[in-house]
Image (tube, chains in turn purple, red):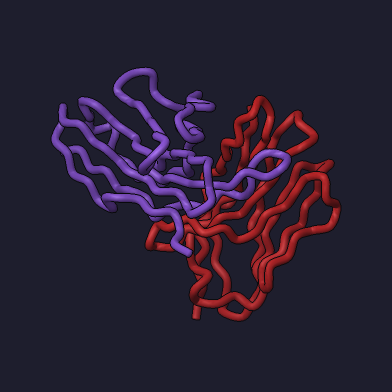
Length: 116
Length: 116
């Protein structure tokens, strides 16, 4: 049973370029979460999605960042016109539905974004 | 809003000894979950243990156990018989399912070193 998959593991972009980060949840999981980890910091919540719906984007910067989780395919976190401050590790987590909500979140290996 | 505080930036323990990592949290909610995640140098986030707030019994997973003091809003992690592979960053996290979102709130982490 494969875990949460993220690709690429490392991504280098120049300022002003676009970054696309992909996340495939665990089999049977319909909830996806994105978190960002700055150096020497804990993870910060960005967005929570279910298939074709954004449920909570309270942690997403208002500009340049967007996320989607289409009916088919992986979840995508997109960062337009990247700046050096976007350099961080981006983690995706997934969970399955339960009768009372969702279960424990399991994390992918992360994508380390470096903006030159 | 929830907050999670880890007051020990770094800890060390002798191999085979026991160590306790501290965590306090702040929430006004009665229904929530608490977690400890481990992040080794590979940066993969690995679930160590989970505690439901409505359960009085402390969670245990092999050498890992928690001391959950709900009234004091304290959730410490005890690692018994420490092994070299336990060396990692440890993050305490809380999850509140209000308003349909299940975002995790993380502390800043404790770096654990294991001395052979």
